[in-house]
Image 1 (tube, rainbow, N blue to C red):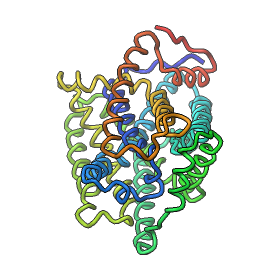
Image 2 (cartoon, helix red, strand yellow):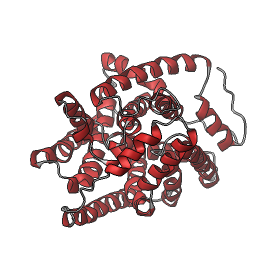
Image 3 (cartoon, rainbow, N blue to C red):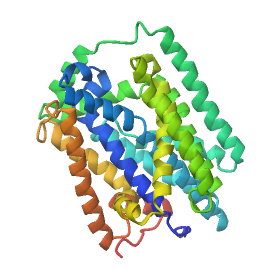
Image 4 (cartoon, rainbow, N blue to C red):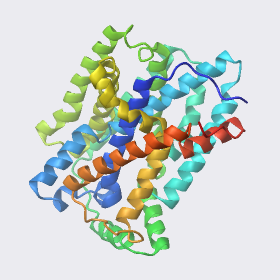
Amino acid sequence: MQPYQGNKRLEWIDAARGFAIFGIFMVNIGAFSAPYFLYGGAEDAWTAKIDQYSLFFIDIFFQASFYTLFSILFGFGIQIQKDSLDKKDISPYGFFGRRLGVLIIFGIIHAFAIWSGDILLTYGTMGFLLLFFLYSGEKVLMGWAIGLLGASTLALTGLQYAARNFIDISYTAEINQAFQSYQSNDFSIILAQNFQDWQLSNGIFSFFLFPFIFLPLFLFGMYLARKRWFHEPLVHKGILKKVWVISLVVFIVFKIGPYTFGNPLWFSLVQDNIGGTASAVFYLTSITLLWEKDRAQKVLGVLKPIGKMALSNYLLQSIISFWLFYGIGFGLYGEIRPVHQIGLVIVIFCLQIIGSMIWLRYFRFGPVEWAWRSITYKKLQPMKR
């Protein structure tokens, strides 16, 4: 099979994908550097006002906003590839079967050898459900997206509200164990703790919940690609501005609004699933609308290389974090305050931008993208420019 030749790259989509990688890292570093993201207790551990403000900043503008953006763009990309395959009369099922299968393999290696917070395994498995919708109509895509996300969010929020007096669980013993394990210089102890954390965040309940979280976002991304609003933003500027306003309002109401009544834990799914999705759409439309302005395009353009090498950069962030925080490396687990985490992410991400720019001067793809592409097409792809 020869690689598909799609239309001219949508550079603002590459920039949005790069921005998503930045936002994902801003959240992930908190989970990588201390046990509080998974087990709770960050507010009690980091009591300085600047750290409290940092946690507030990350929760509102980053938490549940960027994995949603990345998920929407994942579905968007699936639709673009499917359209190209259709033009060549190639069945998409074998193509996507290989592509998703390789992603699952990458995810297994990442999840169990590097970090329990891996997203690739989930994308690969949930992506197979997306294949049932490749030839569905636009209304079906949107109907299922709204139905799955809306119904599950309302139902689970109702259950959480009913159990609101019992869901604030203390994990003191687990937190202490995580500190001991990740600060160890024994690789086997680190991997054992990592597997335990993976089981907690990816248990049976989560396995059944993921289709209600990720599949709707994939479907929504496919829907946006079908509408082609983001293919020709100047033509569809009016509708994009309306989407921008609506998403901003929903973002403010459901992402920031909960803080006006104490940001209760039982409301977190609404904040994440509804508010997070709205903020993702807001970021996507903002980048797209700003792209027509020369100054904004120059600033946002530095995100393109990251977006083109999104998978490689995502995995690189995990490798860097592994060596920074765990005892087998620099052993900074639990030592980096939230305010310093923000600065660290910015520094590392800027270095990734520079590195990606240099890499793409000489090579056509990121290293992981090249392997993914070569296996998908069952042929080694030309790497050098």
